[in-house]
Length: 244
Image (tube, rainbow, N blue to C red):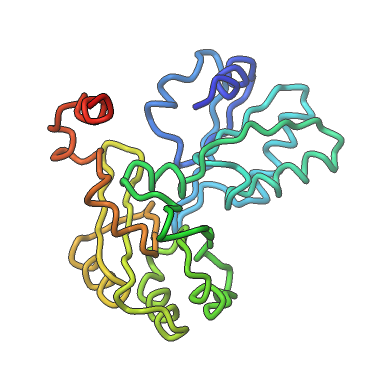
């Protein structure tokens, strides 16, 4: 959490928070604040988006300072824009404190760079969640030759893999599934586009999980620093090599 976010929480009367806000953050929230949980999980919502919008509006109109606490970044698949529009229409002043989106945070903890010279000159973030069907130009994605990161796509992993291969992406393209990224329960399952679904099926992977597709995944074994095996290495090894 940034210093500015912490300062905003200190000055709040009401804190409305999501499912992806860690227990460690919740435990560190200042005392005396009204905490309201509005978390969402697949098929289980404690509140609809419309209800959340009205909740924020009601407390703000009552003269309270409200903090809307989200995991990741509120403007990357976080519905922050929708909530902000609702408040602006009621002439309520809102400021945004940027966070670190899952694509950046989780891949960094997994030892997977989003871009890397010679492997990927760009990355694209795609939501695999849709009210009806996925409206995705698979041919365009497959032709980008860059890192693809799918949010909220675990239940559609087989469909994503099949569509990308049908659109021309090689079945040998490296893929990683990052489960519960940036937590002490993080787990990474690696494979290739043609077999990642079967690998995940045998590992009982659960949401939240991020799907990373692209050649940068091949660097994971060399750059992994978070798993227990890598943490056993001397912490000064990199500095020693640099100074040498």
